[in-house]
Length: 565
Image 1: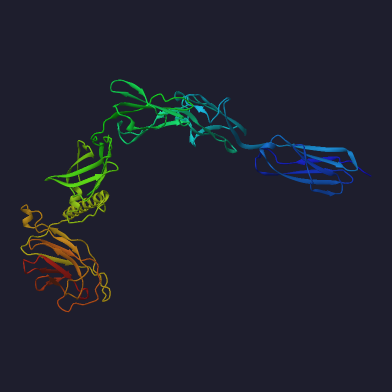
Image 2 (image 1 turned 90 degrees about the vertical axis):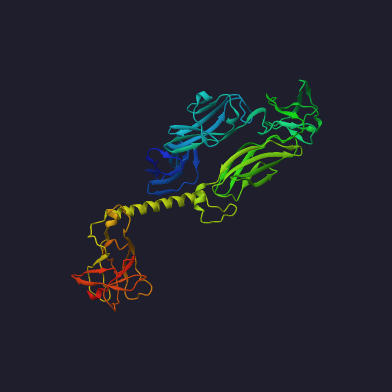
């Protein structure tokens, strides 16, 4: 006996779905005999060939879809039926709710063509946004740089629109908008804003003088969008006579100009005629003007760069000259000429040199007046290089090295002063004597022929009678570490070396050291580089005294045989 399905259940993801993710749905049916057939529908369209599992009077099927923002609000439907009893069907729907990052489209206001925006008109952009959930931020960009609202400058921003009032030439470029929600950021298409404007003069800086009756062409250099379609030229002579020249191109042959006056050119394009013409003063050929705005750009120990702006060339090819004079004595040491530009590099100068430099131009008609600038090479460099360092071209000592050497010297001086102060602070009284005495105190930590050790403390000294009379530096000892014996002395190592005068008194304690050799002569000796060996005497409790018998001895070296202790 055939029976209808009596139950249908459609399950799917709960809550919001995210655009781009994969989701599964399941449809179940019971009560049908034979088991019910099953069909899936998405957005009202049947999904072909579903996989259906049948068992007893039950049927089930699974459906997998990728969420797409265009399916938001649409239904996934499951229909079950007994194919033997087709006139009765059960249907279950699941409405999709899909969240997605903003989708943007940028457009311009009505009657606006982004490729034909005339300078001075108002421009309106609209950013259309499709977003779920709603966007919380909208930003505008021009050439990938953020556009900020500036009402006084005519830039007005609302939630999804941008208005630029009376656009100028700087407003040209690519525009776009960006919006953000919790699903992410969305970017619009880009619109290039092309600003059209009438020609304007773009002549480079320099002299406005041009030579009449010369073999040169004068170019009417202009900026415009679109390019100029025509030109015209005029001349106002010194007698205030205006004359329109027979020339419609962007250049003028100066050989056709025979009178002095003011030359002007005008350019025209589809937007209009230039409001202010390019103008020159037409004059007779003559001597050039001197270069202007001369300055030293770079300077080192023995070289410098000098640059100027060219001036009126007199209507002829000109040459630029630099003469460098040593101030004391006043002698010419360099003479440099350039034809391309008034730019010079002066090499192989001496440190601490005061220089006077004259700069001028010349042409076939003569020489301009001169301008003078003064400068000096580094005095600090002279001190550093005074030992004869030789420089070649630009391989000189950089200023950073000079400063580094100076800083190092200052640090060394400070360290020496601190050491002197520290040693003075550590001084203690000693009995005065006409002879220099040396006490050597040793503390034997380990008695061993292989690794004998002496421990050390410090050298203490006190100025003698000469110091008490005001000569504070006289006779003050200087402590020198030494780990190698003097030449010719082979048995043992010196602990310390001490330099002073017979008027100074010392108490010496040795540093740690090892020595495997035993002395073959007396145990404690005083060695002098210039004198015969003198010996110690009178020892008790490991305290040893010795005297320098020759008062002219100033340098003594002490060594010890610890094996005797």
